[in-house]
Length: 297
Ligand code: R5P
Image 1 (cartoon, protein in one colour):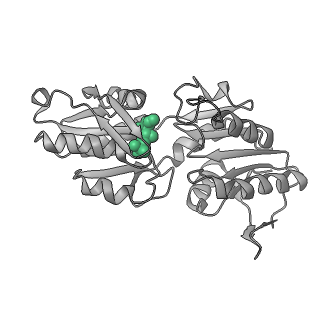
Image 2 (tube, protein in one colour):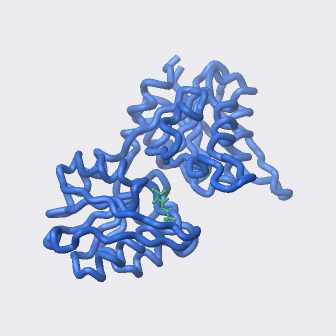
């Protein structure tokens, strides 16, 4: 039987694309809130004996977690052979250590919750910093696909003479991979974060790179303070307006408007989180990882 794909609300387009690419079907699903705020789940497609994949990008995760767990439990109860999770953006990867006494290492607890619920996980560019790989925290098969080749293709097709810039040391792995794919020079700035919304970055050698378009590459834009600080530096140094590219555009609160006001030439993201800045489609990339994970019968 063909695999069954089920979207959490907001994930319908990616779900349809994945089902088409994998020869699967999209299940009829009713997922809504009761008046008291609890979740109602009904799967109106036969599930017994079928492999199921829930598609749920996990930005702003907390309100999504209860529906996700309850839908997975429903699928198992209805007899699904396996239940996997496609989370184009994987939440709770950034608190990967106890920085202050008493803090929870929530990346580990969240990984435990997901591993206890699902048979496998596919995601795009998880924020791996202190955890070396998903396998270090997830105990089920977990595949991470990289958007770097797609980002590099977008840059090569849209920007002449790019200078790729990682705005901080953590972004170097993404910016470096994109630079290598795009065959472009690459610099990493150093960043000091003084608080959730207070960030300072160093400036690279502006004279050396005059004539090039800075392309700021990061995995996540959340408050956008990192991208804003870097963008302002390039604008102040009189270099070409930078292009800001990220895999995951979370854009918390007013982040998108604040970044746009800092003066970049363009802001571009992958469609791991639906946003008007989406210009790079990762559906086929994710489908490639799924084909190896989801059995067809
Ligand atoms: C750093 O840990 C990440 O690679 C990003 O630089 C960071 O998540 C961006 O956060 P914000 O948009 O809040 O500055």
